[in-house]
Image 1 (tube, rainbow, N blue to C red):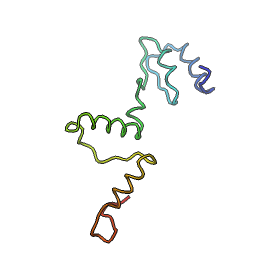
Image 2: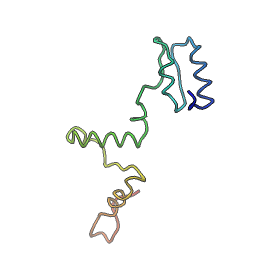
Image 3: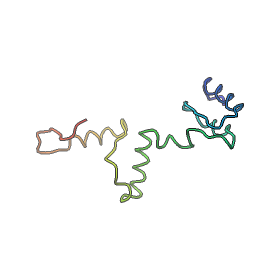
Amino acid sequence: SSSSSGRAGKSQQQLSRSNCNVLWVDIAILHDFFFLIQPWQCINHFPGMCNIARKTRLAQNLEAMKNKFPTEYNFYPQTYSLPKDFTAFGRHFASDSGRGGKSKHTW
C-alpha cells in the first residue's frame, strides 16, 4: 500500500513470502496484513481491535452501549475522554456543594 510506511511495506513483503504459522505484528498499520495472511496463519490482532484496545475508543464504545442497554452496561465508572469531555469532567470534580469549593474527588 502506498500509504504504508517503509517498515510496514518491508514487513508485508516478508509476510507474503512467509510460511510461518503465527505472525506477531507490532505496528499500527494492520489493514493490509489481514489480506496477506494465508488461511493457516494466525496473527496477534483481529480486525477492529483498536475499538477496544485504545482507551478512548473503548470508553466511547462502552458509552454507546450504555445508552442502548443501561442496565447491562452499568458495571464501569463514569468515564471521560479528554479533551473532548473536559467541561463535563471539570463540572464533575467541582460539583460538591457545602465543602467550601473543595471536591471529595481527586485527579
